[in-house]
Figure 1 (cartoon, rainbow, N blue to C red):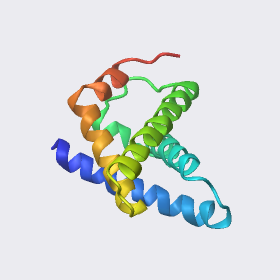
Figure 2: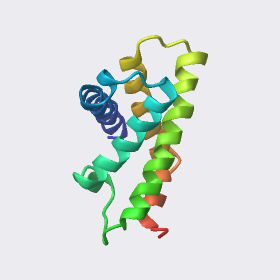
Figure 3: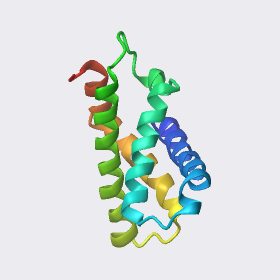
Length: 125
């Protein structure tokens, strides 16, 4: 089941990128690091508000907006670190493929090391 979720997240990251590309990136020359941050941030931020998180995270209470904002910032930085790893270390040239792998990999790793369970159980603010 975790593998299917990870594939979904990979495709979802591509969808977020396409939407952001059409709205933002096509009109501006934005550095790759900033693009990775923005994609990671909005991937997390939007998925909470449209209810994707509810699939694997039973929210008994609504998280406050500041919590979602901070978690989204963390996700943005994770996208930068992971993206640079895949682009420069593993030499993945296709940005769309790289985004899919980032989404797939981060979801899989966070499920295996129970980060998702921890964040579902704890609200910091």
